Length: 264
Image (cartoon, rainbow, N blue to C red; front, side, top):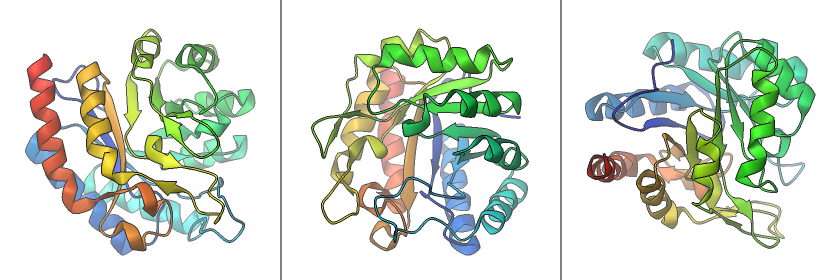
């Protein structure tokens, strides 16, 4: 069961970008769970079992689908955590749903009707990331596809809007439109700071701005925050350029809770 709505605090979706192996994945899950239990923040563990959207053919995509899902299952059972993971095709929906509690629709795929319908039919919670090319108002059509397929368990995530060829920007006015879908609205505090399409074939980022973006997100009323974190982002196999160092997570969350309490 996922218990994150109607809570005093925002909820947190966090973990590494991708399953890199069992030991490091379990470590990250264990440490974040301990932090969130101490701070009374509802927590969902996120890691992709497979990365399909890569800048280069040579970029890391995963340790293998079955192996990665087995690691996520171990996180779920050992630490009693709900699991969030991406899916990319209709066939993956039913398969990933055997482990995941939340199926995440990547931003580039948020208009793919067959994918949304297949995800909805699993009965799992569906987290739809807003495409970098879409207005917040346009996300209602993605939400409607899930609901009209018989599933009311849906949330939407803001992850930035394309700003030129190699940057993203967050328009915080969009939280109002996202909330008009009457479902949880989440702010992706790490992917929204990506600098995509770099000439070297690896996505860049501005992790120095994660705290700034997160503070603003809490202040304007996002229900949840999404953050990718890693003990050593420079050594991470995917998206290291915009991940939060794991040892910075607790002090950041403590600051965010002060903002949350101030606006209630």
